[in-house]
Image 1: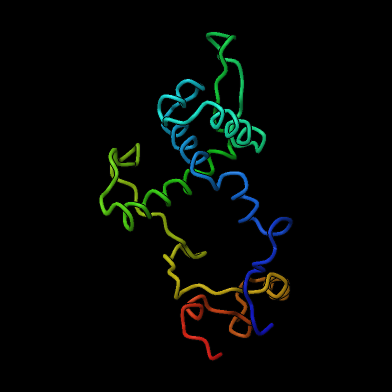
Image 2: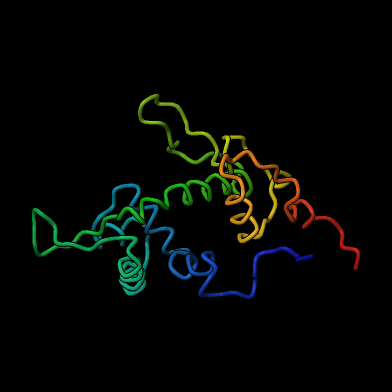
Length: 183
């Protein structure tokens, strides 16, 4: 296991990233999701709010409904109209949308977006989306490593108290990825 990395050739069955990108990894899907998080529910609303062609909107809404990210149902007040709502699966994408927005503010536009996303209780802007350890420490690239899932599982079953020394595990630190290779 000298080259511990994700299986980058695995495009469908076992890797969640390519599978997820098949469903949502396209500009219009993100724009529809953003509009949904902003309260847009109807086909005509999506059409006018995000400036998308009718055929593309119909296709993307169908994909999002088929993937279980949005639901399609008749409106309560007018059964001739339908509304699209985020499912629990779709609502779980909020942190993804916010992380991409924050990344764009930092690296692309250089300015905060308006309106500012805030905590409803305290009326304070939310913190940056981060990667956190099991003990809530904020982690960066230098703090992360790959561990083979089987080794991790075997290590955990051998130590029921959870206080095992994990220093003997085979890992590959993400910080090594950016270092010059010896080849």
